[in-house]
Amino acid sequence: MIRTQQLFKKYQDGVSETIVLKHLDLEIQTGEFVAIIGPSGAGKSTLLYQLSLLDKPTSGEIWLDEVRTSELSEVEKTTMRLNKFGYVFQDYALLPELTATENVMLPILMQGVEHHEAQKKAERALSRIGLGDKTKSLPSQLSGGEQQRVSIARAIAHDPLILFADEPTANLDSANGRVVMDAFSEIHDEKQTIVMVTHEPEYAKRAHRVITLKDGRIVKDERGG
Image 1 (tube, rainbow, N blue to C red):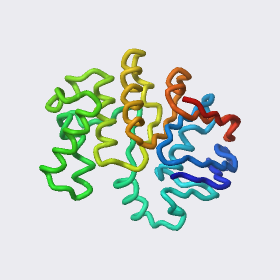
Image 2: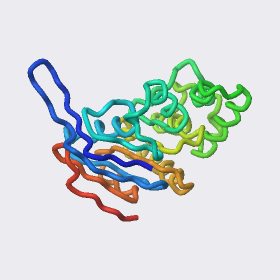
Image 3: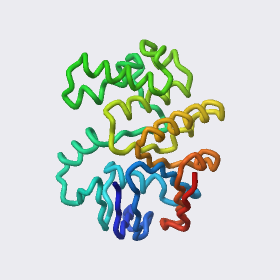
Image 4: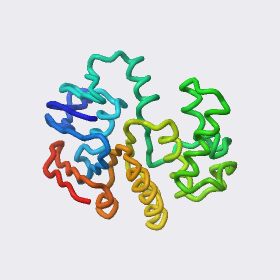
C-alpha cells in the first residue's frame, strides 16, 4: 500500500539547514495498523506528512497504492487526498456551527456525492464509532473524546484506502484517549489500513506494528499484536 525509497527531507531557513528525514526505506502493507513513535524532533509528523501527500519530500520516492507520487500533478495529489485518504489531527478541526453529521458530510460533498447519500454515509460512520445518538450535536455539546471521534468518522466515512492520524490523543485525558484508541482498534478490525503518529507508548501498543524514529532514521521496526 505504501512504499518509500531513500526518502529525504530537509528544511532551509536562510543559511541554516535542518535535515529531518534521512534516506528512509519503508513498506506498509494493506490492512496494517502502524504506529510511528520516537522522541520530539525525530521526524514522526514529517514522515506522516510526506506519506499522506500533505508535504513534498526533498528527494526520494513514495509509492501509494502502486502510484509513483512524484509523477502526479498537484491536482492529482489533491484528488488522491480527497478520495483515497482520511486524516485525523490532534486539534479535531471541526466547524463549530455545524452538527456532527454536517461536519462528517463536508469531505463527502466535496467529492460530488449527492446530499442525501452524503448524509447517509455520515450517519453510518458516526454509528460505527459509537456516536449514533450524537448526530445532531454541535461540537460545543460534545466532550473532547467525542469531538475526536467525530473527526475519525469524518475521516472514514468515504471508506479511504489509508487513514492517517497525527497525535490523535494529544489533547485528550487518559479516559478519552482510550475511547479514541478503542475506535481505531475497531476500525482496524474491519481491515482499515492505519498509519498513526503517537508519543504515548500505551497507545502505540494498540498497533500491530511499531516503527521507532530517531534523528530522522528508523531505528526499530517491531511487529506484534
